[in-house]
Image (cartoon, rainbow, N blue to C red; front, side):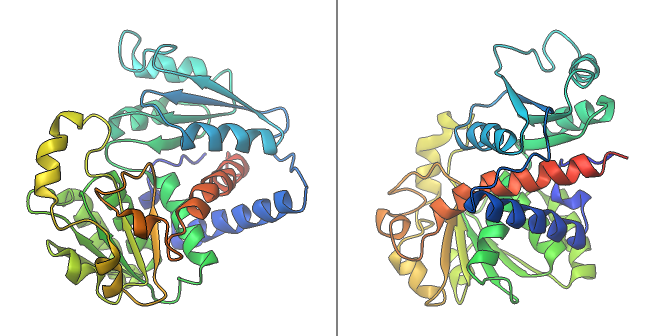
Length: 307
């Protein structure tokens, strides 16, 4: 049985296979065909962190696959508070066919998975956001950005930056991450990516200059400067991230046909300008839709690899 906790757990071929399934399912829906690959099966969705896109995409995705999604908010469960995580995992996994968790600590979701009888999907933790990167890469494929692409991630060295490291190091493309000093990516996660890169041929650049990262990029991406739980740091971060906004001047440094990605929600006038978000180079809403299809690919792949 396999879980989807981080992209590092998968080979390049496995990730490509998941996306092949996702593209097939997207085509089916586009043709008015509702697959029944998860008919009469249930997905428990545990949310310790709130979300719009994650809940809607997983819930609609299970419906389109013929199954059912059960929403459990932080008010409905006590993940790690009160009942031990291992007990919650052993109870819930006896009642459903798959579990998606959006929580804080990566260690919590890993503990849950170690006691679960069914596949567990990481819907976001403080360390990683792997389902988002599957949607991002799916969007890159649709836009023709997979032939030795150069990707520039500009912003905080957070879970999105970590997940870009995992994707690039597995797929073998060039990634430049530019963060302000003091906001760099986790050294251990970077070390893992560099080890992977020795095999895949990926080129990883860690910078503090966003303009250097954006130069000649095929893909430019960013994330909010203050993630969930960092609201108290917002004012200080706005000062520290001065010069890191992806605006038209930044995009001009990239290739003329470069695309802009953002996992959303976007704060216009902070990490990205209104002009860039609404420009013809922006594919953020296509990217958001692909969360639905990429996650269906993950669900179906996991269901067929349960052993």
